Amino acid sequence: MEKKVAFYTLGCKLNFSETSTIARNFQEEGFERVDFSEVADMYVINTCSVTDNADKRFKTIVKQAQKANPDAFVAAIGCYAQLKPEELAAVDGVDLVLGATEKFKITDYINDILSRPERNRGMGEIHSCEIEDADFYVGSYAIGDRTRAFLKVQDGCDYKCTYCTIPLARGISRSDTLDNVLKNAAEISAQGIKEIVLTGVNIGDYGKGEFGNKKHEHTFLELVKALDEVDGIHRLRISSIEPNLLKNETIDFVARSNCFVPHFHIPLQSGSDAILKLMRRRYLRNLYVERVARIREVMPHACIGVDVIVGFPGETDEHFLETYHFLNELDISYLHVFTYSERDNTTAANMDGVVPKNIRSKRSKMLRGLSAKKRRAFYESQIETERTVLFEGENKEGYIRGFTENYIKVKTPWNPSLVNTLHKIELSGIDEDGLMRLNFVNDEVEV
Image 1 (cartoon, rainbow, N blue to C red):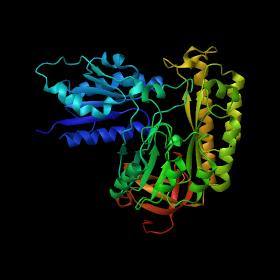
Image 2 (cartoon, rainbow, N blue to C red):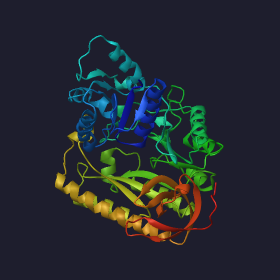
Image 3 (tube, rainbow, N blue to C red):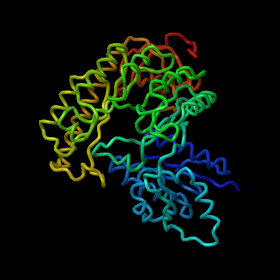
C-alpha cells in the first residue's frame, strides 16, 4: 500500500519553493502527498525562525500531526531546525530533525531510520551540519495552485544585519546557474502556470556563487533579461529585493519588459538613518527615496510594498515618528510591519535601549493603520483604469478573486471558467471588504 506524506510550511516563499521540491522527491519514492489535516504516515514540517511567533507555532503543528495519526513519523526541517535542532528534537513526537543541507536528502535519512530493526520513536534524531558547510546550491520551485509558482534563484546571505538569523540558518550567498533557472522556468510554463514569482534570501545578489565561487558570473539584471525571453511565460514578479541592489537599469528594464510586472517589494526596516546604522543596513533613507522616485517616474501605476521593523533596540519615540512621517510622505502602496523580537546569537539581542513590548505593539498598530490608509489610497488612484487580472482557483463566499499586474486584489462573482485565465478589466470601485470591483473590457481571454 502506498505510504502517505503531508507537509506544513512556515515562513517565506523560499520555504514554500523548497517544500514543493522535497515533496516531489517523496513522490518519486512512491509516496502519495496528502493535506496536512489528513491521516498520513509521515508529516514534514518546514520551519522558520524569522520571528518569535514561527518558533512557538511549531509545537502546535506537531500536536496537530499527532492528533491526525499518533503513530506517524514526524520530521522537522528548515531554518529553525538548523538554528536550534536540540530544541526541536526535544518536542514530544518529533522523530527527525534535519539542518540546512540535510533537508534535501530527507528521504535517504527516513529510509535509513525505517530500515533499522529497532528504533526509538519520538526521540528526535538530529542531522545538522555546521552552517559553513552549507555552501552548495539546490534549486527548487513551488507550484501552490494553477496560477502562480515560486521559483528559487538564490539562497543564503552575506549581509550582517544585526537583528537577522538568516545567514546563521541558510549560510553564504549562492545562486542557481542561469541555465538551470531558465530550465525550471520553462518547466513551470509548460504546466500551464501563468505567473512566476522569483524568490531567494537576497535575490538582488544573484550570480554570486553560481558555480561554487564568490565571483559573479551573471548579474540580477542579466537574469531578469534572460527570463523575459522564455517562451510561454505570461507574468514574472520580483518578490523582494534590497534597495541597494535594485539598480535603475533593472527598474528601467522592468518598465519596458515583455513579462515583468510593475510590482516591487523593497525592504526598508526603518525610516531613521540612526536606526538603519544600528541595524547595519547597507543604505540610508535617501537611497530609498531615490528608488521609489525612479519607479514612479517610469511606472506611475506600479505597486510598491515596504518591509519595516518596529521596536528595534535604541528606537526612541523620536526615531519611530521619523519612520512614521517618512513612510506617510513616501509614495508607496502598502507595508509589511514586523514587531522586533530578540533572536539568539544576533548582535541586536545584546544591544542597549530595549523597547518595552507594549510600546512595540503600539507602534506596530500605528504602522498597520498607515498601511491600510496607503493601500486604500493606491486602490483609489487606480479606479477607472484598465488592467489585466489573473484569476485564481478558489471559490470564496461566491466570488472568484485575482490580482492585477500591479498587485491589486479584485473580485467578481464565481465562475469556474475564469480560473487561471487573464482578462482585460476596468477597475470600477472598492468594496466594503477592501477588494476592488471590476468590469470586463471584453469577454475574450487575453492569453
